[in-house]
Image 1 (cartoon, rainbow, N blue to C red):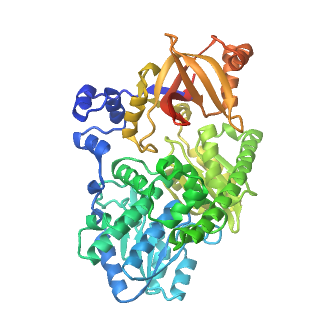
Image 2 (image 1 turned 180 degrees about the vertical axis):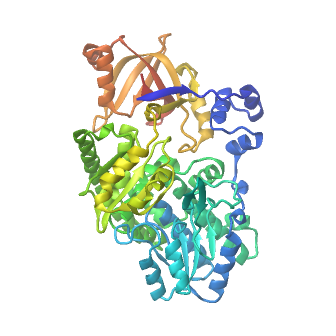
Length: 593
């Protein structure tokens, strides 16, 4: 079920329209993104890299830079310990490139998802110590590794944390007591006393800011000069890649980073990224957040899921095009295999939900012992989409049970897990996603406790469809679509604008695609003006809905000749269909009722 709501945020749209030379519709969409002040509207439309926040605004940044320059000057061995997802891989690469530029004695370690699990553990610390490491530099992890960092301290090692995850806390008498790890420097914008103006950056952006500050101080120049240098521009591509891959909100400086990074990727400076585009058939001139999120990014994640993320790091470190193409081909093949395994896992999860009546639970906890543990998060995401409920997918691991969770807007996953933290051997995450480990005997207990504690109401399970503007399709034009592109990049926090029209007559249709999963329709408005409309959603579900509402005969006529009996309200956005050099306007349907 979905609940349609028109955004009703008020502003003087005509004044905004005149001042920024945009249409009142665009002004309204920008206001719907909670961009209100003049300086913020200007930044949203015209923001540049020069408006990024200074790295030194991050707590402990100066301390981290001084330590790394000191260790580099002394020739001490520095080991970067990252993570096996997109953000972790990009963060590791950014720090490695930055420290190599400083001529540091540096190497990298990315935990193995199955053997090591997420983040720092004592085994990784011991390994680093045995290898002669003096300083451990974390990225995209470390904020929750209090005991592991304390262990490193007993060995006489120096630890510097760069992370972006929530700081762990204990609640005593309703007051949160945060537990910051005992590292020599902790750079994480989520710390309570960090003055950084925008805390929703990913681990790779934290790493990027560290490298800008590091190279700036080493070369005695302003960080903005480093940002515009060859290495600064290359590393911005990876900060943008990770921001999209880690599904950060595309607002404030994230918007500038992604917009600028995508533009740079069109002529990427990195042989590995270029090869990845080549083997996936990506047109670099058309690269969008979708390309990163659904084509290139999953190839990086797949290697961390089914093998080792070291392969992806090696891709970005490739010195030759030949080596890069080979590594990129391996990553793509692994992702193709991951897709098949995911599909089977989703089918098994749905079967279990239906057979066991788990769909009655408000929080879904699904145990799939035979599914590869690395696929739990993807499967949880798919199940969350299907049922629109907070979802945990658990799998059998080498040591007990591991799992991942994906949430809905009304359910803060990390906080809810903290209420029953004694059940976990390890857990972490944030509002919408989490990871966990627990003993097998606690699986059913976890399901029961999460549901007992759950305060979600029926209203929370209705997906909210926010309509930017109720707008007749007749308003849309190729010029209007071009104007909408000023709002790009679209993604989390800045969704593609959605419009709505009532009384849309579906008169002709056909099913397209190798898997017959795309619907293409001729539709008419109340004035008999005709439009092309395409639907990429659940075609079977759409046809079933129309049959139930208008009868089988009307649906048959729709696909065979013509009908005047099918009238729906639709949520849509206008787009350009380009075919053999010809550009035509088409509407893309997102929802119907």
